[in-house]
Image (cartoon, rainbow, N blue to C red; front, side, top):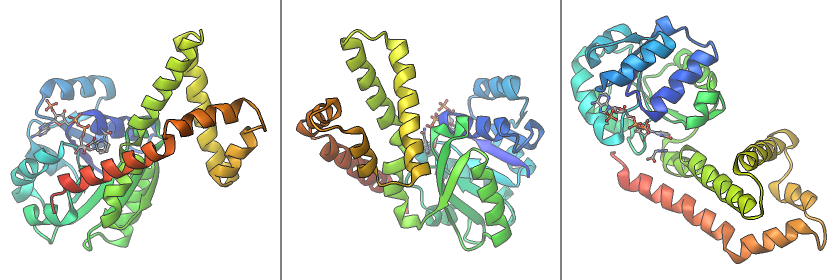
Length: 267
Ligand SMILES: NC(=O)C1=CN([C@@H]2O[C@H](COP(=O)(O)OP(=O)(O)OC[C@H]3O[C@@H](n4cnc5c(N)ncnc54)[C@H](OP(=O)(O)O)[C@@H]3O)[C@@H](O)[C@H]2O)C=CC1
Ligand SMILES: O=C(O)[C@@H]1CCC=N1
């Protein structure tokens, strides 16, 4: 596999770090392009990846191209690479709101297109990526794409219309978790816990709690009940969260994210 990454920003770099750290690809099989050559040089220095001077130089070197630019930049990049693409090149977009149909309209419906929604934990190989394929992607190619996505975490195929809500419960979720963790640490600091210790304690507890859901397969409500003693500390905390409309606010956040993704949609 010759992987090309266009856009060396937060998400492009997270994927790059994931595929290299997991040893899924060696640096010699990865080419990076970004308008900002400083960013590219930094990656060449850090990971020894190949650099392309232009988008089309990258297209010539790659058989899977990850489009990791902002959604409004996607059509600009597609216009530039359109004529150099061949029918066997796979275009894998990670852009929020950009549909498969929109990409096909820009480069032709005979091309191979994959729409994904990854998240930044890809850089520590704990990413979660949703994927939808256009009809030109063959079964063997799907397997290769899953291998690529699984090299930096887990992946799941979903109906393309679910990409908006998926962004609300995964693509954007790391940010809500970080805000939650920061707020918890503030609570700890308020009660005298040193901040750095608080982050370590909370991050491990969040990691363990998530692992409990995945490994015990118990309903989250049951796991919650197991922590909550009658008249104890946990129920006092849960009461405060409910008084602050915690669950309703979280549901609203997912809805706001989903609606924003729909608003940004380029169909
Ligand atoms: N960040 C996240 O958690 C996630 C992001 N996404 C999607 O990933 C995509 C990238 O997001 P993110 O990484 O956060 O954004 P960034 O702005 O961090 O990265 C985009 C990169 O593309 C560069 N760039 C701008 N124009 C061009 C161009 N014409 N050709 C090549 N490179 C260019 C930018 O350079 P410069 O900064 O100099 O403009 C920047 O380095 C978005 O479409 C977003 O929807 C999906 C899931 C999660
Ligand atoms: O905020 C955004 O638009 C991107 C998409 C998912 C995460 N970040």
